[in-house]
Length: 338
Image (tube, rainbow, N blue to C red; front, side):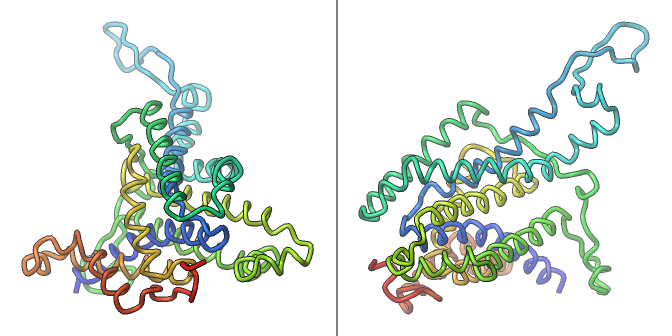
């Protein structure tokens, strides 16, 4: 029972990451019709927003180590700690939540610049050209990050108050001794809130309703005098913000490196295809579904019967879905043919 609950939680938080990236991918495809292979790079840029903020907050100076009295010794101390004491240390400790606020305008600007500077020139081009160009852009961005921050993963710690594990057994009123990392739970909750926010924006605001109408029939919306292209540009920026927030939050789980976007990009594309190209609910549902399947496939009992199944289960499911439902689980008719 304990193992099953743990695998469910593992699957949900992994599925949350897949769903967040896939949501941005399918949002871009559904509005602009662009297959954006640079979307994983946006996830990576979000993660390195945290690294950048951390490096800014920890700019240090050499100060005398007062704990050593029999000779002069010096240590590196962040300016924030020198200026504000415990308050400065607390600001450094909360680098990930602070970075989330910083990453939103940065990722929105990156998304808009990317769409206006490159993507818009490929709206009417074949998907193969879109993939080639955006994949090249992803490589360029990764190499820039590698040159600036180095090739090695850079550790980022979540706030000290949530570095331990939550007693899930006690919270759920179970007798089982079951614990799970706090930050993974926070990631799962944050994923659900961000996904809910995107759906609320698209379904409950006038701006979002116009965007959805433009996704269904762009020409008719334009005939009403609405600049739908400008709204789609904002949506591209919104997709970049979602990917960036997913990456920023993930730094508390995995130290970011320049290649982290590529690791998630391939799996997230599989998620989008399984959910149905252009289907937002399909991307979210497939993200959590495949995350759960991958989690249960990693059980030792399963791997003893089918060695390596956890590495290929997502691709096997994709093959089965595409053979039985070529448009994906919730895909719309004619999306890929457009």
